[in-house]
Image (cartoon, helix red, strand yellow):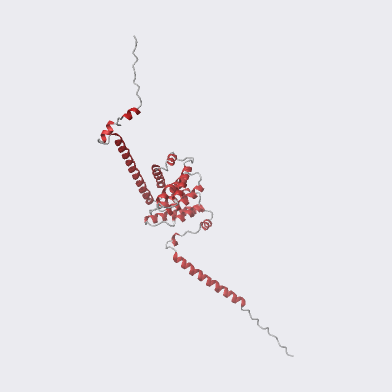
Length: 305
């Protein structure tokens, strides 16, 4: 009796899962190509120097520093100095400088020099000073006021920028000028009350709304900016502004002395040579005699025998 052996029939695999995986991979590859194409298109719009000067967000840098955020801030500050000097030497704008400074401050808010030197670098960089440059410096100084609330130098620079620098750099009809000046006056008054403030600051602040006081304030500010400048090019620009201000101040002083001298001559003997008025002295009139205090003639006591 013959037995027939039943052979197992082979089972066919369903094409569903494999086809789904293949379709998914194809879709992912298509999305990746589209993203790459979009990224290349956006990259074409970047300025050429972006590949060299771009900085990742400060949060990523803080994680990458592995707890050494102060060291990372030092490295970024050094890179900022090199970038600043290179752009200044080439007479090119320093449009990436603010980002370098803000990132370094994020990593180390206690880095005091970043606020003073950084704000000066943003303004005195060899380019024509415009309000946007001063406003970027003020953002750095505002962060410095928060980190060092009892440091007088930071609000002094901020108040000067608001009271003097911004109004001079903006157009005369800029509607922001009154608000800037009001803020600057208030910040400078507060700075004059700080402990350890130099002796000349209160007197300077008291005269800041006068023309002479405003110029003296500008000279003091530029002297401080010169002290914290990090490059010779920036110091050269600050020296030029100082020379211009001091020369203007000397010229105005001479003009004022000339006006006083002419007024003196006109009140005495304007029809005679000027030297005659200086030698003779004030003109003697009936009014001057009546207005002069009466002299008491001293008398001698006659000794009696």
